[in-house]
Length: 79
Image 1 (cartoon, one colour):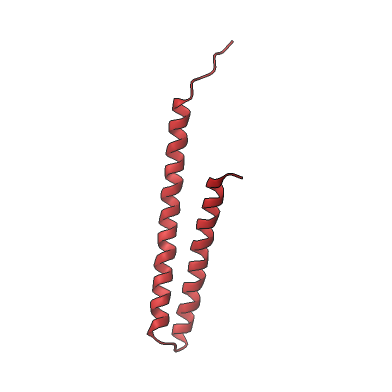
Image 2 (cartoon, helix red, strand yellow):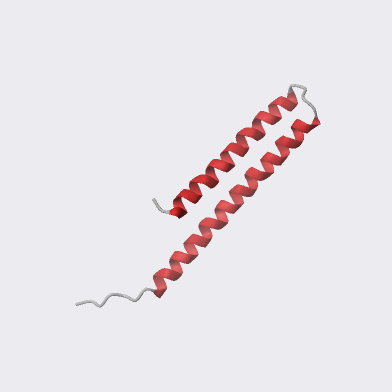
């Protein structure tokens, strides 16, 4: 497993954790906790969205880098 795959797994884990924390905070706010809980929910939801956007851009960058690498690699001669 290379570093790129590990990086993507960690990004997905961070986004998932942020989503779960946002859900938990929204539930706690709905049960009567203070405005701080709502702020935590919104902040963690924003972080989850940011991680998702970052993952999409990271994958696009990897795809572009692989395409350039393929173009730069000389073709093997056919015998």
